[in-house]
Length: 325
Image (cartoon, rainbow, N blue to C red; front, side):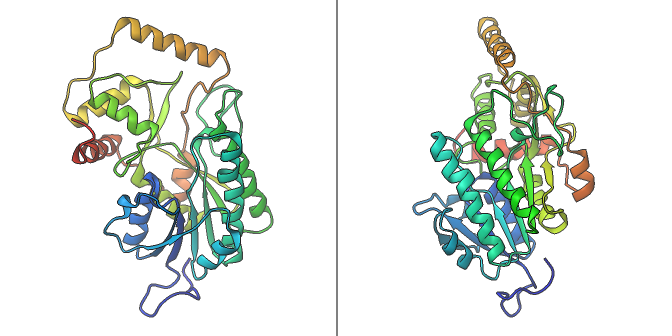
């Protein structure tokens, strides 16, 4: 992304214009800040009526539009050296998920190629990289377990769209964040809700196995590194080495960051939770969201912020907005 692009303004660093979908979301807000710190001019696609509080005060060019408006997207991306596609629907009917996450991905990535973006980063999820034996996932894995959610299934299909474009020579790479932790989790995400539950004195719900957690700032940096160094058609795990946490470990990290006593176990509820997780595993649900991102760490130089710092930032952000005691 070094040569000067056709849309670079006088005095602007060469080739430093980026188009971001999902910029007002959790990861998006952190990515926008990382791009601005790197000297990018950021053009952010948002839906009409979106909550833009996470972008307040930032020098960002806001454009309203739809993920499905391919022609309009291409015109909005003119002059951008890179496109970062983060926008996705988390829940909804199968048709709604397919429209936003599959058809929307096809439209955005195709528009980016038409507009001449020299780097296109598609954001997927760790959930599409499961392994049959439940061991930590790696970048070359690609498996949908029987218990995969509609969201994960739609992201798996979206990856196929990204790889199809890459196979035809498009500069598309795929990133798979694990569970990000940090500021601007305003919705909040599942991980954010677990942090809030601990801060409110409750034990969070959990899955059958471990979950990899990573500082959201590292995810944002990893996306930029993938745009700069990634190989088209390749998947990169934006996660932390040694970041696979049990529920007790997450609780301890949150309690330590907040300087509170961890919530006490309650025998009956703890047993019911264990039974639910056991049944989920026996039914073919995801036994774990653990992963081994060591290859990505080496290939991209992905930062590895200590989780203690990430959880401290998340706790401070939630408290600063009155979301937690």
